[in-house]
Length: 348
Image (cartoon, rainbow, N blue to C red; front, side):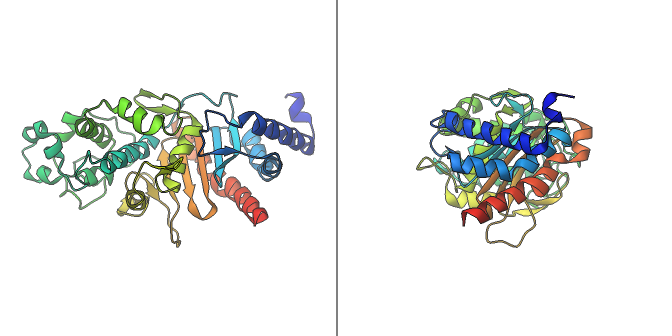
């Protein structure tokens, strides 16, 4: 046991207050934040540290699966936690990459690279037409890929199946008519990526850097089976959708696309069991603008709650045990949400 662990909790809270305040000073003008986000003022940092003291304690003492957390509240960084002490580390986002791909689809649509979401895939990638004899594949559209309703025959309720190469994925038999049923399909990700490369005439990493990485001041990600990026950059993705596609005064995504992406497009289903938008999960709630989230295996999460102007990004150990324990959702629902409510109540 460390000396710090033996200290009374109120002493550790004061230490956190000092650390957060110092962090606020150091983060002013930080290139990691860009200009859309801001660091907390000293007064805000003090209030943030008090509000998130229980979250900090839970992370240190109980929620060992969680590796990093970034909380954005009202456009500022209200809380950060990095178990390894390296905020610039690239984390395995697992299926959070789906929501990032939704953003890139939105930029391509806004720029006219895509004629519309109802554009047939074989119109964009005509060489795939000969790979599948089922005439229904001619009706598969960009929207069907975004909403996981393309209809291919695959059974992956856990959401852990390996991705097939795009042409191989396209050649699979259909189990349902496109648009009729939700079926979580990891192979739609490389398929949609290939479609965007055709539409934009650029390799997907280059297009992502141009359209998202540079405007949002993101660190260069890596693509090792899944997308690896900083936790703050996961939070920025959520913030972009929270702000209806606008960043630093520039409209990167149309507000209409963001609205459609973050409202239910179908009933969804496993592995999360919520309604589904355009590669975002939509939580059940009665609100003018509902909470939405990106969810990755093992406890990777981008949780966006518009009523509180709140974005939470969480990364966790990628393992079946972490997946089963669900500590990321516990943290958001039982700790972060209460802290944010307290701070917003104080602000009013």
